[in-house]
Length: 334
Image 1: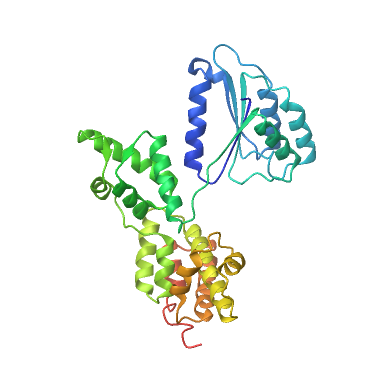
Image 2: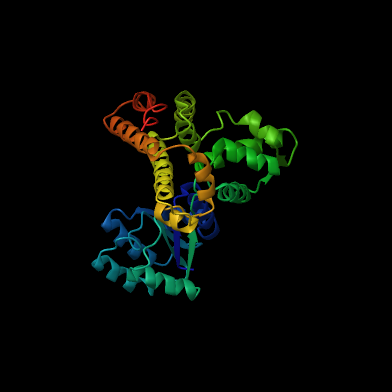
């Protein structure tokens, strides 16, 4: 198919899919001529991608034009959209235009609609690569299984659970650790990766940002800071931790406020809180028992201080300590 639309925030899986497609269609002998990598954030490179995709390949194999951060399905200017519409019918069957973007395509755009029509007609292909929410256990399990399948690896069920506990939704780290585990299994003469191998080979504390939020809600600031140190040492971006905690605590705040107003319908609460799975509300209710909304408001204020400190250049560990000290007791008396 001449046009491939790849999108989603699972950059590691997306890159594997792109690499697999390149291996399938591009002759390595002619890759210097028939393989182009361009950046759609530059409109001139986006136009160049359209021009190159219309050019038949030279020598053996097909031509592949990879356009990262493609603008064609998200906030596409009208003049660029016109060029895109005109180019679609001119791409030969031996050329592949690969459009990559972390954001979901905007279905309101005519360029997206044109692509969707081609996808339905089997004239284009679409694949999504989305990371599961950090609390989505089933989604994380599917992520581990899908990544192992992409790497042709066999995991014991307990090993899947161990990887979820240790790595969570960090797709890039998951891929790297699985490759390391595969080498370890091969050196031991095994074809399967076990939970013991995960415990032996993967260094680091099994923690994630949601555990930090749980500890803060319980007033266990010391445990929260210990978890934060482990996350930071493992290379987790500090602002991403703040964003995850903010979303988690904002959800608690919505649930707490609506409970105070007498709302009992979990679907209504989930919609207001922006929570995709209404069943999650039952768990959140138990976590919030005996805790007033002021606890969540206090935590959100402290996270705002942490974010401000990080953006002013503070070291992550120091920013979290300075911002969260006192979070264990503040707001309880209100």
